[in-house]
Length: 328
Image (cartoon, rainbow, N blue to C red; front, side, top):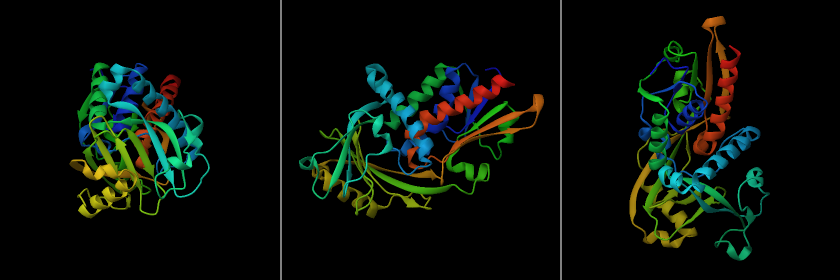
């Protein structure tokens, strides 16, 4: 490959999405990473479209809409849906009492309030919408294959500084997630540990979300052959050991909503650490002047919404990079 115009540092869902957007507009891109996609935090994600624990809202909602439309297009194409592992599911978000409609209700498909007789026992309000479900063990390899088709090279490389990448390309996109805490000295990043269960899906085909109930965060995400049960949000906890007590509590909470889950076969447990921040960092800095000028675009701190924000943030990264390169 000829010398890259852009190096994307990080190969989670954010990095792969940025690399895709840049390659689609004809840029020569490399992805540098010390962990292959199947070993990143993205691999452990549930993952379904839902703007969870992430700010600022005025930027998150437009990013989320772009991603919703992109995932919807993948799900609508039978061939791409099978290849990428992206499908649409009916999703029920449940609440103890009535709440206003979320700001994203204006653009998701089939949004409505649940009728009282539809609500599971113990809930006072709920909404329905169509949610993209993204099966990460299929989606990440598909993204890598698509990048390969566009001649984007994945390079195994651990960086101690972005200077190494800046010496190799005029533009660097930093999608290192929690790693940005050390790589660029961002003390506003903190880890939030998550744990989910994998069980046989059975006939279940509806997503359930309870972020506000008294028993803790609960979600049920049926994929093609299994169902993901969550969840856990342990602030400032960054180990990835399985907590059996949490597994039991997750199953108990999910079974309150869908009792048949107790009868399904256990398939495994996934643990990951969300790269959280008080606000997503998507900005840019120019280093040097004239022909030696370099651009760094930062895109990290997506918390528990990395998949949900992936395409929206990548589109903004693309636009920033294009504007800078065209102005050189």
